[in-house]
Structures are given as structure tokens and as C-alpha cells.
Image (tube, rainbow, N blue to C red; front, top):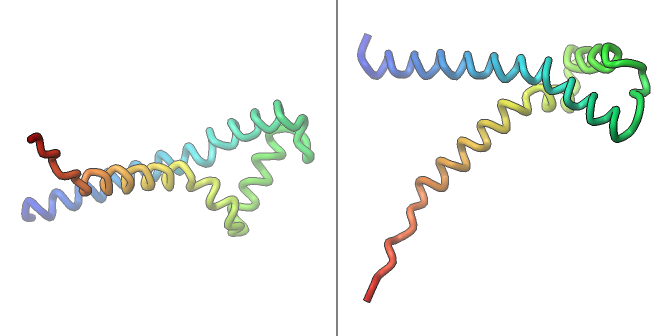
Length: 100
């Protein structure tokens, strides 16, 4: 296997692991934060406790509701947006100012 193939395979593996970790965060930690903030701001969840909220969220995910899919993928999407923004700013080099 050539060096570029090994490098691509390593990047692919690392990106897959990163996606899995951020997906896990989107399914487990993010709903806890959303429920806690919603509970403080709006009061009790209409369906009951956190377990009802999480069940509703997972049901929406399994049914393919786009809002729920976006919510669960939002940690990964945020990271990708940040990466693209940084890459765009790095590519756009400002010309050196002339001192005269």
C-alpha cells in the first residue's frame, strides 16, 4: 500500500471515529442539555419527564424526521462548518501591506 493510500485510509478512519463520537454526543448529551434548558426556560416538558422527551426524539429519528436528524447531526455539522470556515480564511491570504 502506498503512502498516499495509507494516509487516505488513516484520514478516513479518523473521520469515521470522529463522526461516531459526535453522533453519540448528538444522541446522548445534546438532548440532556436541550431538555435541561427547556425545563428551566419553559417549564415541564409536555410529554412528562426526560425519558419521554428522549423517547420522542429517538422515535422522530427512526421515523426520519429531518428536524430530529439535523439536531442529532448538529455537533458534526458544526465541526464541519468550522473546518470549512477556517480553511477558507487560510486560503484567502491578504496581500502584505506596503510600507513606504
